[in-house]
Amino acid sequence: MRKITYGQAISEAMHEEMVRDEAVFIIGEDMGVMGSVFGLTRGFMEEFGAHRVIDTPISESGFTGMSVGAAIRGLRPIVELMYVDFAGVSFDPIMNQAAKMRYMTGGQVSVPMVIRAPQGAGRRNAGQHSQNLEALFTQIPGLKVVLPSTPYDAKGLLKTAIRNNDPVMFLEHKLLYATKGEVPEEEYLIPFGKADVKRAGKDVTILAYSREVIFALQAAKELADLGIDAEVIDLRSLVPLDWEAIEASITKTHRVAIVQEAPQRGGYAGEIATQIMEKIFDQLDAPVKRIAGLNVVPPFSPALEDHIYPKPNDIVAGVKELLGRK
Image 1 (cartoon, rainbow, N blue to C red):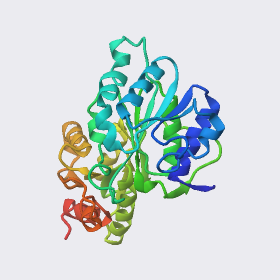
Image 2: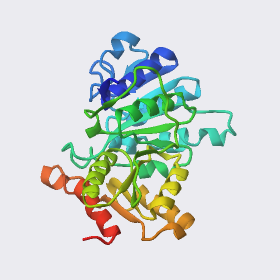
Image 3: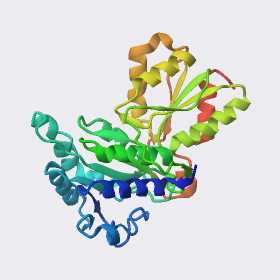
């Protein structure tokens, strides 16, 4: 099977859906002439025209609000926020309009739009361009929240998102764009709410998503050398969440560590941990372990930035602590 990058997979998904459905269009800053800040829409304007690849002013609130209206009228916008950090100026159209419209109209109106947003630390983009904000969006009923970790998942989940009739926050880690993986040429879709067991194991469950899945798999190899057999589950979507996969794994391993790059305080790992404690406490042989980022603003300094989020050695240390190993 061919190997392409995570960025190419996202680009292919958008291109194929625009060819398939004339209602799909792309909107955001530098999406047309520049081809997006990460180069994911290069050549799109020449092929589809400026009415379907729309360059906007620097006004996230404006073009996100316009896209909500377009979706209500039957179009399928793919909105790109250049960085997820800029969602703050778009919260009214995201939180009060897109997320609530179906409910407040009794199902008469749907908002089929995707908001793509690069996020994550490690690129030296400093405090206003490096956050992980998935937990904010999971707090808003009406939004679906998706975080793929591989090119295969990125393409399959994005195509599902574009065809979905509800607003989807599609969060892409910036340092995954250049990673490569196998992606079939034939069409496929990946359903939301379906986690993927990336590595089977029997001693401990590691739940992760986005870039931390890559680190968790690296950590699992190191743990295997220590005689610890870790199962790594890629959640892929947080809303909806695949609770059945989580329960099945913990029922087998009886220990669980949850890994997120975002700061620990208020993170989604805490929500998952609470559900585990409430629903399957009797299956646990040890307390749930969170392995998360520090509660700090992402710094520009490379040495400092690399210290704020979990890396494979941090996951190894956390799992060893969970199992009472030194």
